[in-house]
Image (cartoon, rainbow, N blue to C red; front, side, top):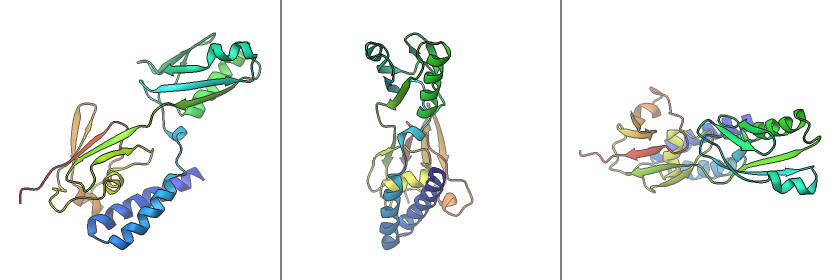
Length: 207
């Protein structure tokens, strides 16, 4: 079901972007409603964790005096690990929250510490993508695993009449790449997938 929803969302995002950019307001409004509905099926636990993420970990199914020993706030360190009582480091970066939950539960079981632990892992903050420049509503867009450049621009209301669509930039980890959105819309170039923390800049055309 999640795979189907993500595929549908990708199609909708592209159509919304093309509708807005082409000026088809009625089509765009319908698609934006469907897009918002589909977004409600995307959950945070489908996003891979990364170094620096702040996690809330809750433990159940163990003696009450032990719950507070493990439950609490943790940060994924530079090596991609979290350090837990009794079991030490558990790798988290690159894994989904459900995968980390399973790893923690299995580690406690294998080491004979708890027989039936129940672990819940959640990220304590939203991941965002910044949009600035000549879009109609510059803003921070919530990151989802399927977010692309066209989808982000659509979420910001589309380009202004003065935007230079041929030189849209994506700043990621100090490196900037340029995308010709006109070619993306014509299927001549791929619609780039975005990552948390990306900064999208849309320049103004001078002619």
